[in-house]
Length: 278
Image (cartoon, rainbow, N blue to C red; front, side, top):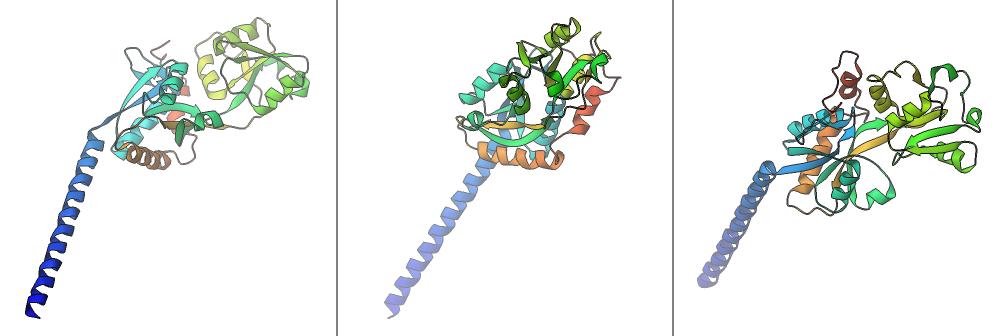
């Protein structure tokens, strides 16, 4: 009996030592992973021409309200980021093909959900009809625009109501390469108005002679859309999921409504200097 008891005690002691060894190894691995995450610098591909949200200042320097918000979130989350500006199509390509872990700002659609995790909203884009100031009392509804030509920038996600108005022949859509071209066409009366982001256009108008001549039409309202920080589903790296979760928590804390007014407003104030990419 004594021999059996001693044997059982030996087995028990060996099991305890084995479990302790495994626990110690797991703790070491967890510590190593945490250190690796803290030391990793995650690249974020951003749109280089979407002021005031994100814009290039040359030599791979990006600025903007989304950048300010993300940098604050990264500090809060303890995540190190390298923010690099690219042409918009390049941003999509990089995140779709897993060449960068993060990108911004992307509006949600089913196609993009196939290659990106939508982490948290950075701002809310509001599609808006811009017209010449003298037409404010005339162009008060989509039906009032019947037969008119309305511009929009290539690649801009149009409101459903506007798309349907084009499809139903109520209005004619005029696709161009940039918001500035829309402004020029409107002042030359080649178009009767254009659809664009409210904030981006208000920002652009501040630096043009059309400021005060082109205005938003408040009588025609479209729903806002959240623009997100995303992570590439094709990008594989230890610690990425933890970095994603940490950034999501921080962004939600700093920007609970998703509109980021306090980050955007400084770029719309009259006293702001001309951005570095102008």
